[in-house]
Image (cartoon, rainbow, N blue to C red; front, side, top):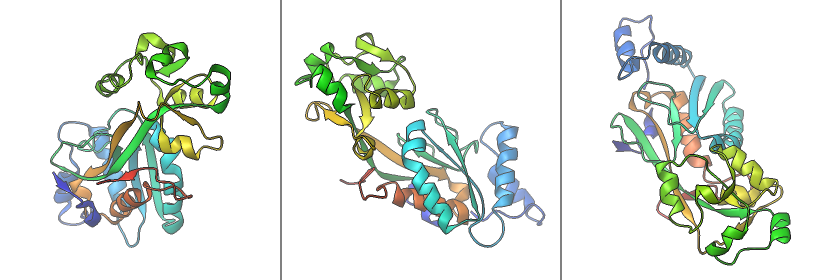
Length: 265
């Protein structure tokens, strides 16, 4: 895999030109998926012409898509009003090789050799609650005291969750007062004072009603953050511009608060 090559993006031959076969070769997925091919061809055709125009499909997790990307996309379109962005939000990793999306913001290192990936940094996760909840129930001084609190957590464990749960004694499914696999639902429950749960620390800090970090010295997870796209898009102006904007802007919100700790820190 090559890193940091996305600053360059792939000018596709227009289907009406003699080398149309080359264009079709570029967009054919690794296996099957005629609908994905059709969608990619439509986006590719829209990206032809001068200037930053056309359609770019970006995929990200629900929380990143709702809490981090909107101001970035708004600023990007202010600069490039001819650019159209399709935002596909899912905690499932969409397949860039099958062209389910052009660009992905991922919480794990992409492994496929055909992808261009840039490690943009880390997001810190911590336990959080509202001031009102802690005033009512008290603030735990140790992980052992979490058993005395209403915990908000997952319903079905993923490999990442299983690894993370080992960091906090008592933070397991059977102890949760409220269980859901929706990260957005967990965040909403924390914000409404339903209990203590895991939240991205920058999101907790910049909320209209900031959440309170609980046990910061005893529980902290670092979530690596990557941006990836298919190497076949490395010369595409719209994809290159969007890729670079996401990489640069994801690190800070409008108030200068770092949303993602830069790589290397």
